[in-house]
Image (cartoon, rainbow, N blue to C red):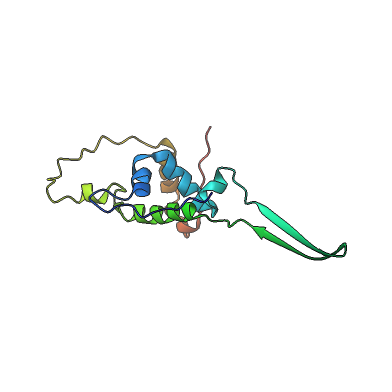
Length: 149
């Protein structure tokens, strides 16, 4: 049985799959992982395409065989990828938040709070060491790594 993906009714809410990507971090991570791996989401879940081979005989002698393989990308898989592309258009390129919320003209900036920063101790150690080499010949060519003690 093949399921058809129908267009979602348009209104003030984004389509269903985009809403799921927005509301369900695990679903977003799953679809983005499939995209990075360049495989359909259902393949990430363990699905394998089926193959059926039909043989044609003439007097007991094989004269032809035809193998039909299930398509790699289903309509649902393509819908998820389209939803991911559409979801990304709803994200702010600066903060990564919902574009509608962070650019709302009604907001006076007090809608958002910025907590005190936390320090990345690895980056601090790297910055201290890099400062020691600022006068080196072509310091931009130095390759750095940070190791844990």
